[in-house]
Image 1 (cartoon, rainbow, N blue to C red):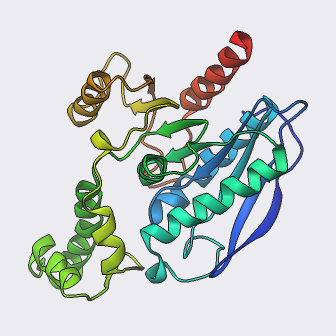
Image 2 (cartoon, rainbow, N blue to C red; image 1 turned 90 degrees about the vertical axis):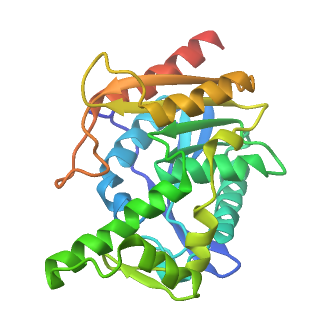
Length: 280
């Protein structure tokens, strides 16, 4: 359970094309850090709200201020999901960082989950001001892979309803390439958003100059990092990126049918900040 702390402050952050709904978790006592939380893609956002809230509260109790932002077209922010664009999401990150830095007067880092972690990496790779640190939970490392996974949800639904896959991912990708939006599990995927996510590759996005902590949730203790993730880690190591990989055991809470928790992930993340405070 997260330590008790003051309730989060809800606010609407004004941006160029509307407002973004945010939850601000003020640090208890002296500020020892600041993080902007970037949520996962589509339905994974809803699956992970509880874990994000638990961790944000726990970090705030340790003196780390956290701003959770619903990106454009997501959650309670303005716009529809079909209006969302990758560059617009990066502008949202800019606005959230500026707000949090002004509020707390200290450098801000990014905490991303799943596609939110890939967004954090892509943002940091081109940021005018490098994030103070990156905290990556179960990062998506390849944009094409996550797009294929998302498109398969439509294929599965078509098979149930019509008994056929109607051309599979190839047909859906063709529609996107022709400039047509595709409806998937209640979300309208714009071709511009898909085209921006598709080529993203974490192996070339890790920035130098800020610490990266990568947390991977595995179903059983003692299992190694999955092959795709191991490949990225090896590349980062060769590039002399300052990063650490932390393996924890737990459920894949971003995909479970019911809302699930991963206490080991919460504990390991808190321990990371306790160790940093002790070292400081």
